Image 1 (cartoon, rainbow, N blue to C red):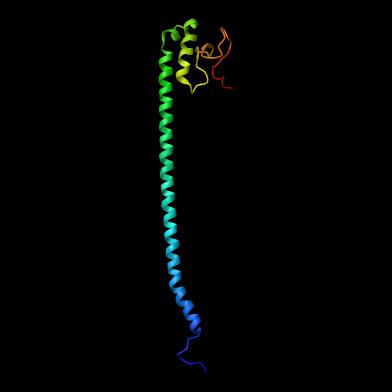
Image 2: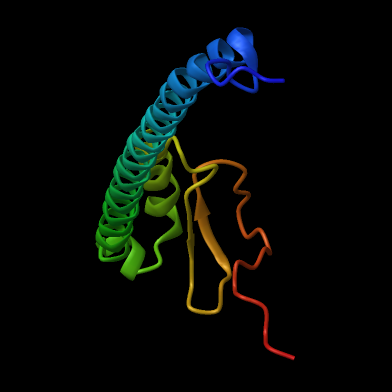
Length: 135
């Protein structure tokens, strides 16, 4: 016969059950906090990545705009408009150090034929920088 004052699980079972009743909510709260911290860190990383990409895009836009303006100014130079090869070669050779990010600085006519180049230009060199014709 079982005594009514004793539980089915005994003292050890009751002790384990009370410990679990305390530990499970603490473990759940700890996991929830860790998950929230992970989400917060991911948000911070996304924000920093977005800032980095935007700053890179700004630098790229400034680079393209500056280069475009410089080349448009060069296109309006009298020696370029007159296609004067004697003055063009020295002009592009003097300008090349200002455009170190370019492999070469060249002047071509409307058909893409080379007039002058900062490096590797030979007089009357027959190279074409024209875009290929569509098929």
